[in-house]
Amino acid sequence: MEHRSHPLNLCHVDPKLIAVNRAHMLIHGAALLILIHYRASFFFAEEASSPGQPTTLAWLIIFLGELTLSLTWLLYQAFRWRPVSRTAFPERLPGDGELPSIDVLVCTADPDKEPTVAVMNTVISAMALDYPPEKLHVYLSDDGSSLLTLHGMREAYDFARRWSPFCKRYGLKTRCPKAYFMDNEDVSASVGYESEKEEVKEKYELFEAHINGYRNRNYGESRDGRLDHPSTIEVIHGNSSDEVVQADQQQMPLLVYVSREKRPSYPHNFKAGALNVLLRVSGVISNSPYVLVLDCDMYCNDPSSARRAICFHLDPTLSPSLSFVQFPQSFHNISKNDIYDSKHRSPFGILWCGMDGLQGPLISGTGFYVKRESLYSKPMQEANLMDLKAIFGHSNEFIKHLHWSDKLNKNILSELGAVCRDTEHLASCHYENGTKWGQEVGFKYGSVTEDFFTSFALHCKGWKSVYCCPSRPQFLGASTTNLNDLLVQITRWSSGWAQVGFSRFSPPIYGPWRMSILQSMCYTELAFFPLYCLPLCCLATIPQICLFNGVPIYPEVSSSLFLVYCFVFLSSLSKHLYEVVVSGHSVRTFINEQRIWMIHSVTTYLYGSINAVLTKTGVRR
Ligand SMILES: O=c1ccn([C@@H]2O[C@H](COP(=O)(O)OP(=O)(O)O[C@H]3O[C@H](CO)[C@@H](O)[C@H](O)[C@H]3O)[C@@H](O)[C@H]2O)c(=O)[nH]1
Ligand SMILES: [Mn+2]
Image (tube, rainbow, N blue to C red):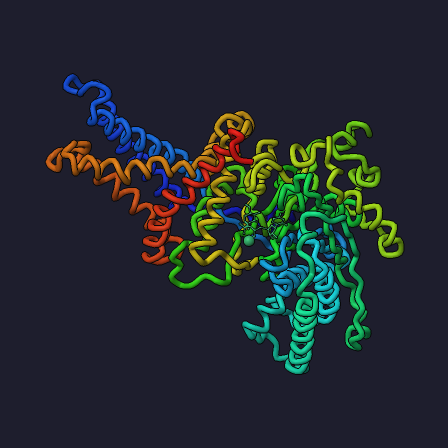
């Protein structure tokens, strides 16, 4: 009863929105059927010219284009079928003693492109999450294997020992120091706040100066080693001489630096490879049942995300089948007139809410709390040792930990050297040879968008996910804001999605047997929407050529079918406009989104699709 009257979370369904969506589906769908009938009947009409005639060819191309667009529209309706939103009540969680522990996995790859001070701000913000420090363990994967990053971690640990107690003492919301000092969030009128703030600010400036000084002194640091280096794992210890820190004696979250081995002859599988190494290393050190994944450029903007996520993970009805809780990606560098749609409004504002009402949203790369067990696939209890080794590799230590959960290796701090030596082979590049890492366990290899592929695999296995979207962004990062970077990024994503679409796990074939038809429609739409490039390229050329050559391909203005064409055009635009406005955005956003969608369709989606086809056929490696 207690649980029913005070649930840890609520799911809200908006009947009005659902009614609008479904009514629109019906009317718009009927209009599309009329148009398809109109096109199809041309080919059966007696006066139709023979195949090969320019008119027939033009009609055929336009028909195929319109059919593809109609099919994409149909798939898209799955997102509109039952959108929901959710609220979590962290204040209703049990006491700290009963909370499960959490491992935070942060990835960084290149200290030139991802400035070390910013990466450390992300690390510090994660260490300052509102969660019992003995139950929080932060791991940073450094794919660049840079001494600067390792040095930055030591500096970050020392600064965090001053910073976290300060945040907790005054209940600060912004726990990323750089953002806090920039925003000038003044929350407390307590005595001593102002002077302590000044002191901490000084420490922060010193911390920045130390890292930048180190970088300048070692500017010549060789870059050759990035693709060729052994693994390094180090548990970071404080070395602070700060008196306040010495006196405070507050417990800090465990902080671990991990740089996996890389050799030019071994594929490193990008971020998925890095995350799998972190899963193994954290699995033998802290082995928390829940894992938060963060990109190094996305800091924790609100300390309550961990407790919010745990509200879903501890919910007795959701918990057994719940794999992950995804928070939206929000960005701090978006201008008011976001001409390139850098904030990705549609996925985070519409699509993920739609999937949340089905089986759950996708992993969005960062800002999600996943249950470790769901990434390990099979139930461990029954399997024998040889089977487990064939799946997880040869580490006895790692396999031993599969059976324990939530037990921090208490000896870690005393036996630190030995543990690190032991874990180093878990981070070696041949550890995964002959195992199921990247296929059946961990993050999936085979697509540059490991997040899309991994969530598809999880949903296929019957796991669910939820989308939590509180009004204050829980995570904030930097988005791509110039056209060049954006085009490169979306080409990469399109290629990754299409890679899954063309693989043997293709959602329309592999999905419907393993998940609901609506959920697999969502995945199909996402995997194949780079193919928008085909109808868009046709429609951007054929009608114009026909017009100049006097070939009629649309009904005459006086025909009633002309009205149906107008209706379909206006109806799809007004539905888009409605969704933009209802989500609190302006007409300008609508115009920007229309424009960038067309730009993407004939550029990035096209290149991404071509790239996926070339990779599939082996022309490109
Ligand atoms: O070999 C690599 C490559 C990347 N990364 C890290 O992965 C993260 C994402 O990479 P980035 O180059 O920033 O890609 P984006 O396109 O910005 O990332 C988006 O798209 C990716 C692929 O879908 C997701 O993994 C990300 O979470 C999502 O933010 C960053 O922290 C990188 O440091 C590695 O650790 N190792
Ligand atoms: Mn990024």
